[in-house]
Image (spheres, rainbow, N blue to C red):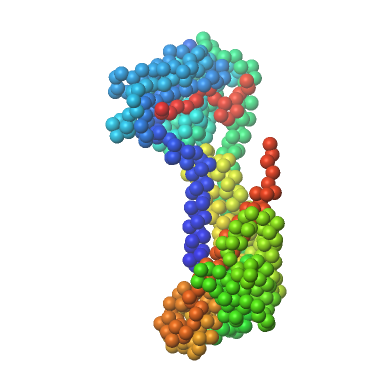
Length: 573
């Protein structure tokens, strides 16, 4: 249960990191100088077709700054005039135009030549005014105003934004669209769009389709038709509908499929065994086999399994353990099963003068690609032998487990795709449902393999007996009532407790219930609990050596979504 809880927490954390990175929040959080608290944008069309734009942008400063800037790029056929920028309730600012022409501008508004601390000036309210001509586009059978009132070049999120479009009384609007879908209020010929918690680098735009009227500053756009504009908007609406319904539907399908897999493949067979505790070692299997079957359910042998094998070989007199972390591989004849026998020969092969040194071998692996590859192959053979032996018993069917993995991978991929494609449509909604998909998919890899797989009758009894043996070892009162009667039995307990991942707890219990046996045993003196981790480290070193040596170096129209005039961005400097 602890492993499952840890896995779920890790999944949630990983998902938050993914969202944080891809949504632009990470870059803003670590390098952003400001946050946009509020943006109030007014675009008012006069009778000649000129749009009088007034933006009021409230910056909350995070880092020392000298001023703020705003840029409006060239877009569609629009001409820009009468550009003015100033800071509200502040005297002494000066404007530096880095670029300025009839199509757009880029301007800095300096407040100070020396950096100003946010503590001294927490908020900056920037006013931007300009006139935009030829925003009104006259098409074949319809006219439009297509404006991007917030551009994707702002690298800060926006807490609140309100955009007002005001049209003359003689303008008769047919349809109004926004990208993404936004709340809109209508007051006569005034349209008010509102949005909250806009992610960084996200644009907002509106398309107004209207009956044609003669205005002085109009752009002749013969490619614009009511049909072409509506086709674009219908495509966008379909995508929006998909963004709303597809994630929850996919989540529901994933849950149903997992339930069906559990129902058909995960139900356990009933067994007659009803034991509560096992006070004796249930089966004479070696600890690596027990680790692979009971703890990892035919998935692998882990560090505890390797620790336990080394302890068992030491206990049987095939190894000697040095307090400095060396393993002395002794020359001894004896009957070992295939997996322990192979591991003993494996240690012998990579020893020098009978000494297996982790530090010396790591150095050799990092320098010698051939040796590294040979080590990886030999270590893989050992792990394969363990799994082959464990699987040959046919204790656990994992067909349902593999089906759940396929469903899980599909769910995780879908969660990434949905978030990447749709999060700018509705950030919070996509965050929740993509997160549920990610969690549903990811948890299939965290749950024990017998959740969607099932034990045979023999396998279920085998599993339950070892679990009950674990319970006996972990229960101090039960262990103190039936303490081990000899040093040999005490060491047996500790070997299998290690394979089952409960060695620390059992050793503490045994120190109390069998102090005499504990003192007579030498097993606890040695750093056997670190050996499994050392093999993982050596595998990493060997893999890096092989990879490094073998790597190669390879050297007009109506306007689609995001094509509205205006936009741009801004920031602080």
